Structures are given as structure tokens and as C-alpha cells.
Image 1: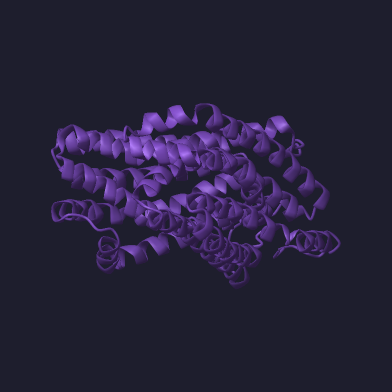
Image 2: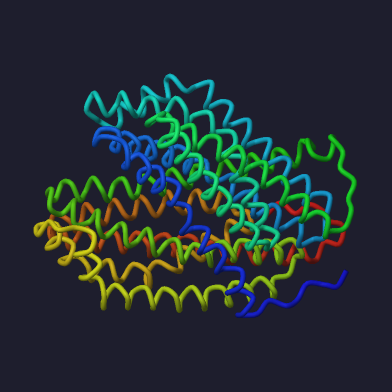
Length: 452
């Protein structure tokens, strides 16, 4: 085998583009479900599918650490040339995803009660959505194991295969939704069962992709003792625990923004809801470079290569910055047209237009936080990420208390922009420690399992 080619700007883009496409394809599962039920169902059934998809998006996103942790640990094992641990990392992560999914199935009744208590809905919508929930909950193990598999492919730099895996899911889900809803008349429950079966079949397809990847890699002996090694399992759970807590703090920040928007009035809430859709779409693009950063930084960390890590971070950040500038310009030039495309309500349009300039600043002021997230995930700086996100949340809430009473909606957005700056600033405080640990690892020839 020849050694890996050096990282270049072209290679960074080649790695990022499939992730962008896969990220943009992710919402298509819910969109297809709503489109299919919209051909046959009443308004309540359409609302029920939308509510059910929202619940599962929230629940599954809370366990997104399975994807991030898998990417980081796989990239580091690959970077230090530990082929056995590359394979073991996949097995550990998949087992964890299947286990958590099984727990969700066992806890489905209290989970369903809690979900419908949080999201208020009319009785007919809740009844139909319960049928969707009862079917979709059985997808939990496949969905979470799929996160682990997706992260493993990204960790190895096989982003094209990750895109294929997402495409397979969308195609199967669309076909089964049409069959179950239009062909068999199963209604809302049919949509849920289509998504469940699609996720299990996509996991089987993912296993096939793993086989193809491993065929091209050096052989390695796997034992149960290696896969379940206490030190490796402890590290896996420690990394995932910290990323999970970091994700909860991130969700809390966006929940605070929505609550603050509501306190400023219904029109502000509606206008900001439109602008948050723009931010979500932009995040799909910038997250792609953060994912690439996870991979290339993880490989460099696995080698103890501080110089290579700095180069990798610089190359990915350059392109992330370029895309951020383009995204901001697009919002400045075409934001009004986008707003009119999304809503016909004049009050909502006016509120969104009033705060559009702040929204246009999010990409250029926020890309550094995405990039530093990717760097710290790839180098498994779990405690730093957890503490930094909590600190940034506290700073954001303090800014909101200080600025919103004085400036209203403008203060709300200034505090939100400050949130992105605080996220980047608190993460950047960990750079000296990261440098010290990487150089320390590089100077220890006996090290075989780095625990940054």
C-alpha cells in the first residue's frame, strides 16, 4: 500500500462536498413522509406526521454524539496505523447505538407521554401522531447504529460512501412510503413503518459498505477482549458523555433564543423562525467542513503530528471562511426573496426583514465556532467541549438579560451573535493545552493508545 496523499485544498473540498450533499439529503426523509401523506391524508394526518418527525428528530439528535465520537476515535486509530482499533471502534460504536436504541424501545411509553406533554396538539392530531410514534420507535436501534456507521466512514475519509448510505436511505424510504400509504392504505402508521423498515434496510446496506471498505485495508485480528477492552470502552463512554452534555447545552441555547423571541411578541417569533431556517441550511454546508476537520485533525492527533494538525485546521478553515462569506452575501442579496418565498404573511415578512442583517452576520461570525468544534471533536477534547459550551451558554444568557430589555429584538440578535463569539472564544482557550498534549504524545514512542 502507498502512503496517504498530502492534504490539499482540493482534497478538503472533495471530502466536504459529499458531506454537504448528505446533510442536505437528511431532511428529505421527513419531507417525503409529509408529501406522501399529503396525497391521501387530511390536515390532521399531515400535522401528525410533522409532529412525529419533529419528536424523533429531537430524540435522535440528542444522541448525535454517536456520530461525532465514532468519527474522532476512528480517525485517531487510523492516524496511528492501528488497524485492529479501526475495526474495533466501529463495533464498539455500533453496539452502543444498538443498546441505546433498545433502551428507547423499552422506555417508549413514558417517552411518548413526555413527548406529547411537551408538544401540545389537538386530540385528533395527537391520536394520529401516536400511531406514527408506535411504528417509528422500532427504528431507534437502527437509526443510532447508523449514526455510528456514518461517523466511522467519515473518520476514514470515505465521505462519498457516507453520501451513498444517505441516498440509499432516502430511496428506500420513499419507495416504502408510497407502497404502505398509497398502495396499502396504512395512513400515518404506514409512514412510520416505512421509515422504520428503511432505517433497518439502510443499516444492512451499510454493513455491505463496511465489507467493501475493509477489503481494501490491511488485515487485522480482532478479539472479543480487544473490542470490549475496559480502557477502550471507558474512553468511548467518556467521549460520548461529554459530547452529549455539550449537545444538551447547545440545544438549551437555541431553546433560549426561541423563548426570548416569543417574549418579544408573536411577530418576532414568527420572523425569527423563518431566519432560523436560513441558519439551519447554512449549517448543513459549514458543518461539512467541520466534519472534515474532525477527520483530518483526528488522523494528525493519532500520529502526534502537531504541524500536520495545524495545516489541516488551516486548510479546512480557509474554505469554511470562504463559504461563510458567500452565505452571508447570499442572505444580503437574496434574503428578501427567500423570505417572500417562505411566507406570505406580511407581518412575518416585516419581522424577518427587520432582523435579516443580523442573520446575515451569523455565517461569518459563527464559522470559527463550527471549525473549533470539529477540531476539538476530532482530538476528543470532551471535557473542554462540555465546559466551553456551558460557559458560552452562561455568557449568552447574561448578554440577553443585558441587551434585550434595552434594545428589544435588536438586543436579542446581538446577544445571539455574541453566543457564537463566546462559543469560539471558550473553545480557543483549549488550544495551548491541545498543543502541549499532541507534542507530549509525539515525544512518547511507547504510546499506543492516545487519550487526549
